[in-house]
Image (tube, rainbow, N blue to C red; front, side):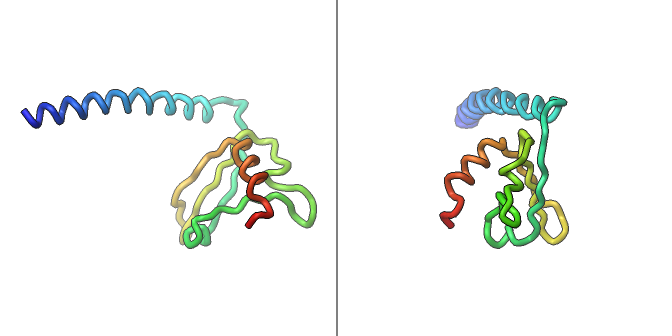
Length: 107
């Protein structure tokens, strides 16, 4: 009886989680398969592993660069440690721009 109760609860939660997950899987597929999607790729090497931070370039030699001038819709950061890809994350560019605006010069 306890096993049946656990299974039923699990099944109910699983079904809800499955529906929730499938919604976002479809969004991810659409993003990756849309020929109009544009990406800017950046690679973080080793130091992120110690700090937990990633760098976002805003300017170079006093001129806007990186996130400030990108035309991309998505910002993909690859986290590499000891020469191996650890993970990659994809951000909507407007999200990164809002975070930069909020925290730039506050570190």
